[in-house]
Image (cartoon, rainbow, N blue to C red; front, side):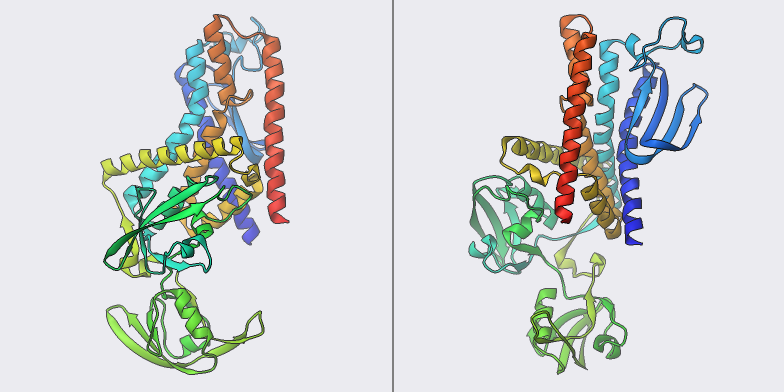
Length: 453
């Protein structure tokens, strides 16, 4: 069932971002009265198709890995009198260079607009996000060596303000492949402090670890009961979903990690659990169960799973973000801009060799991420739609023949020289473009296989 869900999520994700891209080409061509012969999403055998009153065929292919808009005169030059029904239609070749450039650029532009709309929607409906509190610091990690500790609240990274934990990963992503130091400003109790974390070619290899985790920082995960195991001690003795565990045998519990460590040391023992349920404080006495860990030791447990419902978490450790109409619009534009800049920077570092090209992901990696994002909820899934839409827009703007960027380059050359690029030049450039794109796809697919192995 998980595989089917992952496949469905992948198809939905790709169909959205590719469909919007091709819709940009389609609507702009229609705006300039250029006749569109076919609008197709996916490749291979057609699952279904239909034709509108303007003789445009719409279809959906069995492989949702791309799509195209075929315009009259594009890769099918119309000879006068050969197609009586199309003789009065405007072809792509009859359009001015400016009109053709607009049609070509409209695809990537549509992807950026889609991302801005997604971020606008998320801002206006509101989201609850993890705060920038540190929930755990990995022993021996760069963060631990720099003095950061549990309960610290990250305020700034490299003088850029941080409000939620996602901001930490975004700021750190900008430093991937760098050598130098990362400056972190944080709040400990009522005092602010700054620490500097040295880095050298940081995460430049094939590493899919989140930047925050690579630095040794984990987000705050509260000891809130999410699910209870049937007939487990917690269920039998009356714990409920949403209970916030405050202490075990008088030992204060701050994070889920604290809870796990304390319970693991108490197998088959009678313990007192102090918890908060709504506005009430309660103490429950129960007998723990036990299990044998991978290292052969007997450890304690009470049969609960951490809550992933952020609305149940303590308000001090979450941030609710909801904007008015105008501010949400600015947020949509700003988020699209900052992720675009981040991706461009990453591409530049990959080209220069600062970041390993092994980090490039293909369809398998995207499908896995799509499935995980869909399971995490609509906010995560839509965020991934926006991010991949920006990726697709930028990818298509690369000056590689066969991509939109390559076509824009040819149109620019035509405009400068005052005449169309020769057929031979177009043919050879398309061949080079196909080789480059196919090589890139094979390389990304090989990376996917390597990750699975």
